[in-house]
Length: 190
Image (cartoon, rainbow, N blue to C red; front, side):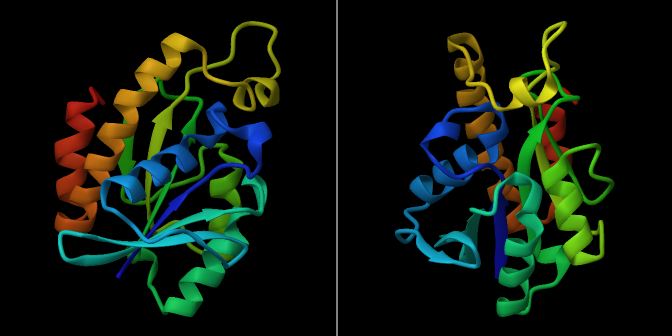
């Protein structure tokens, strides 16, 4: 069993915002693999689907981005998963818009949802798929930028990034993180 976690903030106010790209990919995965309707559990919404004969749980924490770790920890403990069974999908300011980068482990890189997950799991040894949202324009506050909605051009780029992220996630489930990194980081131009 695998746990895929899409990070974002709950509520209509945050729909289609840069910080919610993890939720957008999670929703696309559930649609693609005809997942179960979401149920409220682990302080979030969780759906179940099958990818390449593997049971995959797709979790969207509703704790807000900066407290995502408590939701992930609850799901991990309930299903008795190890960190190697977890993939977290989130936005990244340090990647250009639409760029996808999968990593086996590592630091949070300033992403507060990842910071909280590291704190709750006590480890950096779990996979993360980061989707570039680019840097804010001059004189913009970072918080205003990440909580801002994608413009039309960005949305077009994100549609491609979402498909690419779903493909990379399916490869991670079926073939492991190394194969997924080799295949999809290169295809993303990283």
